[in-house]
Image (cartoon, rainbow, N blue to C red; front, side, top):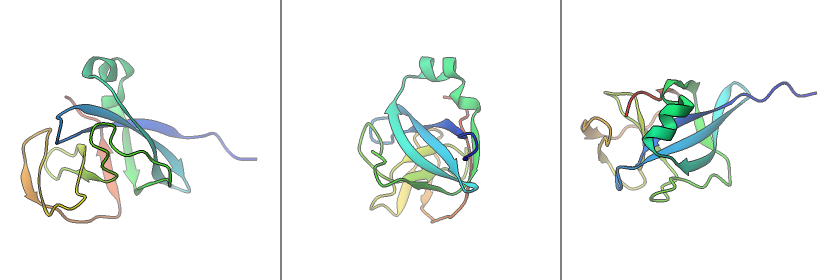
Length: 119
């Protein structure tokens, strides 16, 4: 019999639209997988407490992961300065974080330390 499901929502921001989205992640085998993404406004995200959620590990997507609900990007970027998630990195080598404005070259990583943070 399988144990209890461990799932949570972390927040992302679309750099193209500057709009917030929730990314549902589920723990499988000690790592996290992205299973769903949905638009959400700041007030609802704050009410749900999503900014306090934290995950550590890989964050691969399941085959039917829908991507960013605002631009459709299937990838995500973790800012090295503020530690927040945004979509993108599809064909880019340079990126500006929609959360804090930090800019720089993109670098691949296998494991992440992600937290929701403020808005």
